[in-house]
Image (cartoon, rainbow, N blue to C red; front, side, top):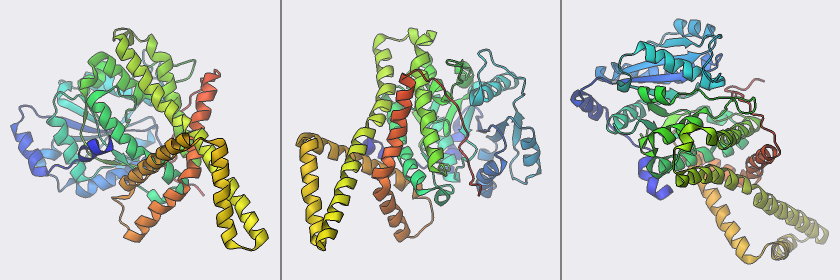
Length: 450
């Protein structure tokens, strides 16, 4: 998957190519960067927009003419904030009315997104000429990637929903080292997204760096019912699943333009993210079989959908047991060996005792074939973390020694952090199986309060 996708993962196209393309197409497209927030994230949004503002005036007139910016929020004061800020491009701030209700009484982010597509459908004449670029509050994009995103969208007219890679260099070193390790896996997941756009169901779909043609977004919609009294917390996954059932998997594409975002700042925030993702997937497995669109697909496609979503979750959770056993044996033998060596006042005794003990416990507890298989899995896991870390820090200005040091630190703490990472998934699956359907969406903090 990695070697097949490495060339398409991140793509670059020149501004001249895009301008030439715009001169040839028969219609004038509109690209709307839509930042969706629950409100009170103005400073974070402004930081991202400021990076775009730093190059906006240098863009060709042809490109600026097709770009629009919208902030979708539930807080009235957000509009006043951006009216006072001096930014080169106009920003339209849309307030979701407090008394707005959807047909299915959607809540959280889905409610706001549904309000926006209904509003846009009333106000725009040709939705098929409009593309919505979904941003989160902290999202930002470079000029090269913005140009690439537009270019790749326009040259793939049959791809109506497109994704691209997301990396997490924004305020990277303000994040705890535990969160930095956990966030290193996320760019790797983008390789899965790339693979899914070619041949599979979207058992994972980004909520940002997502480009959707406006008429398709309106057709699919974001209006999802509560499940056991709790709102949907993975509306992006639900949207991708519904789009696949209605339009087929061939509508998904890959634009390859990288979006920059901020990692979770604390271990607790990272764990909360995992809980929300897993519960969102469980909500999908629990509710999707009742959809009319699901009933219309073939039995084979139903099995593929179920196996894809379940497989990703269960394989993730299954990492908890071998990680815990491996780290437990490792810590026990190290401690026992150190104590033995201290008693004999012989440093070499520590090393030899450790080797004897690790061989003894490994032989007694784990057969050779299983240990070899586990070691292979561990090596692959470490490689995925290091590849994801490379993507997260490649755009950060730092010297080579600091870059190498970060890779080394993340490598060393990976075994321990993996217990927390996979353990919270394991715990969430157990609680769901016992009937706990609670699902909440807590915004990941964007700043540390001391």
